[in-house]
Image (tube, rainbow, N blue to C red; front, side):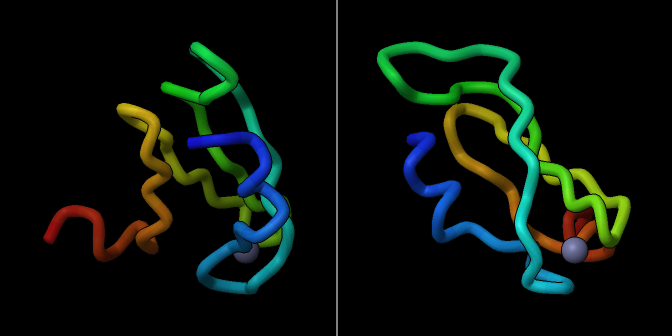
Length: 61
Ligand SMILES: [Zn+2]
């Protein structure tokens, strides 16, 4: 994902701002990392440059 989309990304649960943690970055894109919501104390993983914003209880389905 590109960093710019942080501007339009919001927590799926509370619609609040997410904090970005970058683990791996390549060509201005975040390949691996995490998006964290301080309000919900929830973390959404970024894998293969795709942020997984599914609520935790839906991830295993
Ligand atoms: Zn939230």
